[in-house]
Length: 362
Image (cartoon, rainbow, N blue to C red):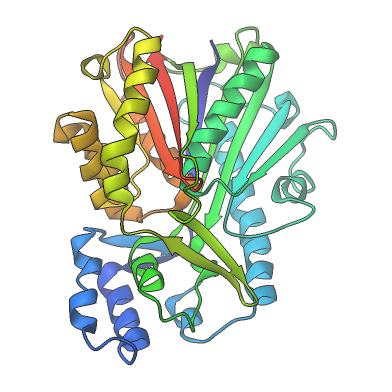
C-alpha cells in the first residue's frame, strides 16, 4: 500500500495573538453591530491562542483590490510553498536521506484561497530543480477538505503507478481573502477563526526505491479512502465570488450537520474495512473549529482525548483550511506510533463533503 514518507509544514512570517485580532475586529465591526461585545466572544469561545499570517495586521486595516490580494497570494504561495517542499524532501526528520527533486513523478497542488494560471506548482518548478516531465495536478475549491483529499488522490496515483513518488502541497492564505468592507457575521466569525498555513507530504508506491529512505520504525500506509458529497448543500460552506473577491460562506449549522450526517459515513467506511470506532488508535482530524471537534466526539462516540492533537493545532495555528491536516499529521508522525496502530484521517469541506482515509502504521 502507498506510504506517507514525510510531512512538513511551514509557518507564515507574522504571528498574532488572538487578543490582537480581537481588538482589530472590535475596531472594524463595532459600528455595524450594537451587540458587538457579545459577538466578539467568538474569539475566546473558539479557544484559538495564536495564528500566522502572510501580512502584518496593519495591512488589513485598509481595503485592497482583488488584484493586489491575488498578486500577494501568488508571491507568498510560490515562496513558502517552495520552502515547504525543500523541508519535506531535503530536511525532514522522517527521512534518512534527502530525496532528489528528479525522483518526484507528480505534484498535487491544493488550494482554495487564491488563483493562479500558470498554477503555483509550475512557478515553484521554475525555482527548484524538478524534472520538466513531472506531472502537475492542481486542485482548487475543496476548502477545508482539500488536504485530506490530496492525500487520497496521491494514494490513488501511487496505486496506479506503484513505482511513483508523489508530492501533495497545500498552500492556504485565507487572510488574503479578507474583505475589509464586509460587515457580515460570517466575516466576523471568519476573522476569529481562519489563518494561513503551508504543508507538504511525500507519498510513494510499493515499488518505489524511496521507500527505503524512511527513518521511522513504523511507516504510515494509506489502506483505503472514501469521499462523500451531501446533495444540495452548496450553501453550507464555501465562497461567494463578487467584484472585490471571495466572500466567506460559513453556516452556523455545521456542527449540527456533522452530528447528524457524519456518523453514518464513518460507520460505512469502517465497516467495509472490518473496523469499529474502538479500533481507531489515532484520530487525525482537520480541526475546523472547537465546535466542529466537539461534534466529531459526539458523532463518533470517541473519547475527548482522541482530538488532543487536532485541538492543539487549532489553538496554535487556527483553521488554515486544507493545510491544517498536514500540521496534525506531522505531529502524529513525530509521536512515532507503533507498528500495527490504526488511524483515521478526516476532513470536511464545501459541497458539503467529507474525506476519510484509513491509515495503518506498518
